[in-house]
Image (cartoon, rainbow over all chains, first blue to last red; front, top):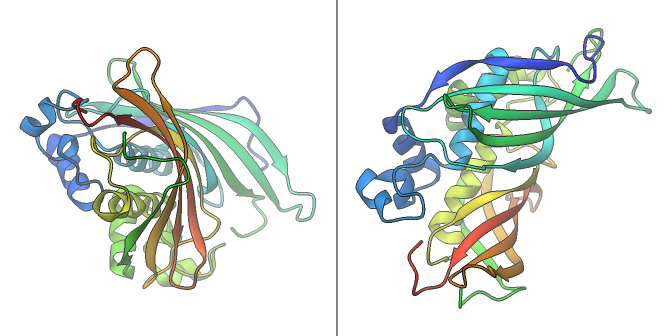
Length: 145
Length: 145
């Protein structure tokens, strides 16, 4: 918590998404035609295979955990708001840019605080595929998460 | 879109989550100790193995798609807000209860509309593990999603 400053920015590494991964995620968690099959997807709103928004969210989390935001106690979210301005597509290369919006130490428990972080997930063309405003719990270094 | 009424409620089937699935999801998308390993999780905030919130979200989506909400054009979300009042734990049995909050037909495109749906994901003890207020796009039956 001590190292975090409002306005601080982080940029994650990148990850490429394959059509195979999009379909595998969809089979498990979001089995709809536009996430499962290129041909079936053509005649839908998406006009072609598109990743589930929850797949984009899960990939964003992986990027945040592995390279996106160095928080002492881990990245533990209470919730937030999320939007998907566009879909993630096969072969997209995503990275995440985050900014600390607010940091509020807890009044009752001085070793804890609540962080608001805005994370944009961006593809290789600079298009935003997800905006996540997350509320995260943070701890001081001396305490255990 | 024609069959949807504000106040309408839906209840999904149930699904059981295993420790194995919690760890597999975490390895792929949220590799933090409290999602990966029972022993390591004990000394963390969660006090034991807990599912990633994004795993709870993905399972919720599966329940909605398979049995939760019969929408003609599929369940296509523009975004929403999400919170996790508690974590999903190994062996939890989850189901989703949804309610239509608002339905607003598009002014410019009469074959489309925007739906607000509140979906609570509930475990076997009746505890809410996720609240999702989602904005969904809907189509009239005669048009193609």
